Length: 158
Image (cartoon, rainbow, N blue to C red):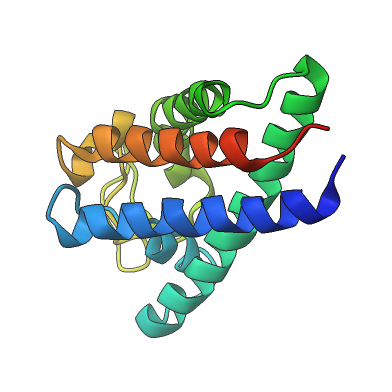
C-alpha cells in the first residue's frame, strides 16, 4: 500500500466530496448540511457544530478512502470507473441505510416515530434523505461517484 498516495488522494477526494455537497446546498439542490448534522452530534452550539462537523467529515472521508484503497489492492484494479462504481455503492448505502438509521444515534435529531422535542429538534433525513429535498439522493450519489472516481483515477496500485 502506498500510504503517501492514500493520504494525499484520500484527503483530496474528501475535500471535493465535501465541497460538492456544500455546493449542492448552496444551489438549493438539497437542504442537507452533512457537516452540520455531524457536528450537532457532539455539540448543541450551531457555530461550533459547523466547524466540528467539517473536521468529522474530513476524518470520516479519510477513513473511508482507506477502505477504497484496500478494496483496490484486494481486487488489483484502481481506475476512475471502478472507483466511481465503489463510490456509487457507498453513496447508495449512505442514503438507503445510514440516513434512516441516523435518528437512532443522533442525540439532537427527531425520528419519524418520535416527533421533535426541545432537545431532539433536527429533522430526520428519512429514506434516501428525501426529507431534505427530492434532489438530495442525486446530490449524495453524484458526490460519492466523484469521490470514488478521484480515488480510483489517482491512487497508484503499483
